[in-house]
Image 1 (cartoon, one colour):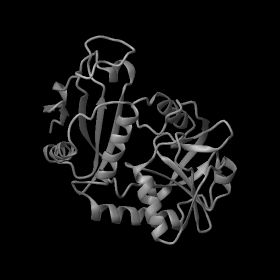
Image 2 (image 1 turned 90 degrees about the vertical axis):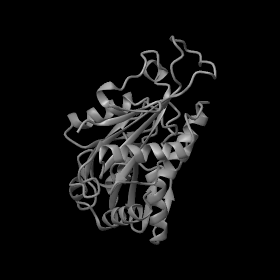
Image 3 (image 1 turned 90 degrees about the horizontal axis):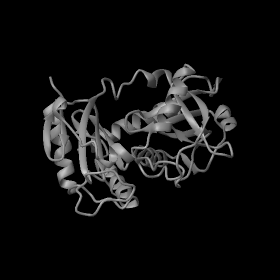
Image 4 (image 1 turned 45 degrees about the vertical axis):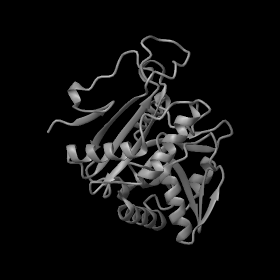
Length: 287
């Protein structure tokens, strides 16, 4: 079946989908995006993603492309047209096509470009990696200073992901200048020590993860202590357990950092239970 994608109000076969070469997303990485998971043909935590989308647009002084109701209808239509059961929907908004290249923002009459597409991810909920865990390496974080805005500027995270692949592991956790862990290439980072779940506090240094917010809420409800502060590589390696969270991995155990096993070197009971709780609750609330 040919995948159907959305481009500025039209549903098109992917081979017919086109965006102008003058679009600022293409020329300037002047755009933002969101990724919403799909489980059982339903949207996971969609309202949270829309709230963050508006925050990103506001921080970049970019207009919303349409109403929230239209965005929801479009997501559901893409799920239906593509017969998507498990996977994700990628949505991207750029400042649009001003008809030429300029560093200055175009006038307000230039409409934003809105595109979206589905991507099937078999075994999203029952991911084999969750049974073995991720291995990660540490790399310096040299991204721009507004990591809290979910922009399409993903070159360095891609480079860091390739560093991990070259090292034979699953991901890189990026470190600030003082040696503290910021986050993974496309996920938030956590360690567990006793009954405490530790993760970096929300600042401009990290993405304000939608999955992160839900996981911490469920952890608190399950009587875990949540401590939001920076932590070092040494703390990761000495932790009882560690994990990452994101829309397409949910709660993923991290069992090794820089060649040293974390805890037993296998997914631990706390992370395993947090993943179960997250998936259970998200399925109940999915739209």
